[in-house]
Structure formats: structure tokens, C-alpha cells
Image (cartoon, rainbow, N blue to C red; front, side, top):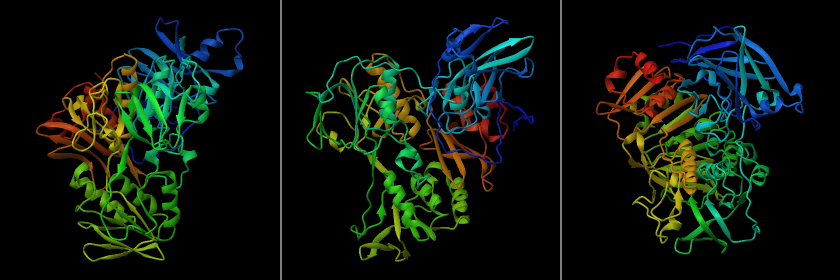
Length: 599
């Protein structure tokens, strides 16, 4: 295994496999900043990059005090393929050397603040070690998701073998930029029941679609309609941070939507789509015509059968209010989680420091077995048990019993009775597409909308993305799959927007997933459905491992704990179109990975 090469100050990291002893993920968002790139010739003849604020600084009208300039290292301090986090006073920057050229940009991933110096540098971009977002080192632009914002870039020059960075102070502090967006030029009364682009939903597919349209110069009307009562929010955090409010989870402010002419209609549930008249009807009777339509309605919970459906304090985690109620009701009380889905298990983990007891009921013998394999599942089960979680596996719920209408007991089919003051049902989900049954939009037997590589449905002008679709996955030979991942929904939204504008694009992203429990995270990349073997390197019991999922003689997915940035590194290999053979991962020698990933 390679190691993290470090100096006390500043930190220098060689881009190779890094073994982290402990993860420290700051689950927070930082304020918005804005910068875009331009380049100038440096004394050594190679190109450096800086933001448009830097460009403005060259003009006499710009205030010099808004910028900081500092010598950060000697030209020979960094080898090709190395990154270093450097301190400029008001903030830090990521200095990069690739192909003999230096560049500098924000050092934190705008998604959750991961230190990009611990990520993967390859072919002109840096991939985040936590969740796989990718940023162009020349422009700072986000090239792969998750996340909405890009990174500011800073001017770099070399003088007398000294590397000098000039940076905007505000950009150093915000560590993000929002791409420039067009304004709506169409003169439209807000009551007009027609939109050039109508988007049903407000998740990442919907939001990225709207933003991409504006970024690409779309100047007609965009309307987003959602059954939610909140502005778009970070849904994956619901199960990890139960006490967070909708405002704390908010992805964009109302001011953002106003500034970029994206109309957002809340509490508007679509109940019918007429593709012949290009009209969507909503539950309140309101109708809107469209020219282009994106369906991104997400998923709905799967119900289970049991007696006592009228008992209160039984939840399917769907909204911030649900999460807040679960946290409040579980305080020093008894919590029961039904189902061992990732969401259910994340809720169980989040409740261990709040509830008197946490019980998990599952229909299989080991949680996560289908997704992560039995060895990893057993190790995670042990982690939960060490944190006071009691499992009742190979079991199902028979009845919910209450007192004065409030939940008091959960009865299992085995006859076991569990004390319960709050219950969370996490038994999976299905696509929210029932309203399309008579529309003519094609769906498969499970209710997923089938789309092509450009996210187009069988109906002209109608696109779909996110949890509701079955789409061709390039990684698996264009096999039609459903991948209900937060990251993948972002990609769908971007591809759909480009398609609407006649700029054909395809989904080529490698699926990237993560889950967090007890301060530890699992990273996962690829598509492991149908794996027939798991090759594990490291120590599963110590939760420091990498698991390669194979089918026949090929690696189709990878998962890790405390082995960053190996999942991002494997993502680079998958994304290049190269095949990883089972024999490559059986030896424990990872040099092949570093070599392939840096070609």
C-alpha cells in the first residue's frame, strides 16, 4: 500500500493509495462564491489559471486589497502528479503540478467540504476522496457529481524558481463558485399556464436540469413543480442527521431561484400527463402546458402489511418533519427500525445516542448482504451490536399495538414482543410513477420509466431522470438498470438538459454511493448487481478494508472503509473504460491500480 507523504506545514500529498486511520467528515455546506477562469502566460511560458475576479483585478478600477499574493513553494518542491494544500492567510488553496505545469484552485470539495489534497489527480481533474465529485484543474468546473457548485481557480506564476499564487480573498473563504447563468428573456406573466420547460420534481435531477439549462444559455421560461413544501434540500442527510431542519438542509435559497429565473411551485402534485396536448394536470386542478418536460418525481416508500395501521408514531422517513419527529420521540425511549435498508440502518445508527433502546427487524440473516456481501454485512452488524443495537433477523412485523392511540409495542411474527415508542419503517421504495399509467410514457413491469442514453422517453420532448428511470449503463454494456443514487440523479438532470437544448450527451458516469454510520463511512463505486464473489483486502473486523465485487473474472464494483481514496481511484479506472480482472485484486498488490489510474 502507498502512504500519505506529509510535512508538518504545509501538507504535501502524493496522489496514490492512502490509508486513513480515521475519517473526519464535516457535514456542512459553505456559502456561495463565484469565479470563472481565464489564463495568462507566465514567465516560464506555460499557462496558469485565475478567476474572472483576478481578470478584473488587472483593471485599475479593481481594489488591490481584495487580493492576496504569496510565494508558496520552490518550483522543485512538487513532482508531476502531486498536490499540496497551501496557506495564503485568508484561506487555503490546492496547488497542483501536472505535466510540468502548476495550477491552483479551491482546496475543499463544495459538496461536503472534503480535503481534495487527499483525492485523486488524473488527466486534468481532481476527484473527491469522499463522494467522487470531479473538478477540472484548469477551470475549477464540476465535471462529475454530486454537488452543485464548482471551485474558484487562482492565478499561478513562477518567478526565479518560486511558485507564486495570487487569489481573491473572498474566493479563498467561500471555496466555491457558481457558474454564470442566463436570464429568462421571454415576457411571461407568472399566471400564464405555459412553460417552455416544465420540470416535475425538486430533487437533484430536477435542480441540475434547471441550472444546466441556464448555464448553457437557455433564455425561455423554466418552471419546477414539486409536491414538497420546502425548497430543494439534501435528502441523504435526513437519515444521518435527524434533527436538521429543512432550512439547514437547503441546497439553494429562494433568492437563487429568483436571481436565475427558475420558477418554483411548491405543494403541486402532478396527477396526470397528457402527451398529446402536452399538458400536466395537478391535484388542485391547475393545468400547465409545456414544450419540454422532465419527470423526476423520485420514489415512494414500500408499505408492509400488519395489524394496527391506525397507531401513531410509526414513520416512513420522507421529510425533515418526519426526521425531526423521530428524533424527538426517540429521546430516552424505545425505537424500533423495520427493515435493513441503508436508510433504515442509518436511522438506527443516528438514534443510538438518543434512544434508551434501538431494535432492528430484518427479513434476512445479515444486513447489507445483498449489496455488500456476507463478510462485510457481518462486520457492520457487529459494529451496530457494539453500539447497543439489538437485531431480530429472519423476522417480520405482525402487529403494532398502542395505548390511547400511541405506539407501545411491536409484535413480530415469531411471537416476540418489543417495547416501542417510535417505529421507522425502512423496507425499500418504488418509483413514484402511478400518475403516468394512462399517459403513453413507457414504463417497465416495476413502474420505472425507460429512457435512452440521452434520458429521453419514448415520447418526443419528454425526458425523465433520477430514481424513476431505468437507463442504459455504459459501465455494464448499456444494460438497462435503475440506480437510485443521489449522485446519479445529478448526472441524469444534466444530460436531460443538454438533450433539451439539442446538445446530445450521454450518461457515462460511474455510479458512486456512500453511507455513514457511527462516524464511519462506506464508499462504493460501480454496479455490483449479480456479483458472485467478493475479494477483500485489509481487515474487515477492524473496519479497514477494500472489497472488490466480481462477476466471472471481472471486477464490477468496489467498496471501502478507511481506505481513501481507493474507491475514487477505482472510479477513475472504471471511467477510462479499462477492465479490472479478478486476478488483479487477489494478490493484494495495488501497484496496478495506481499505474492504471494515472495513465
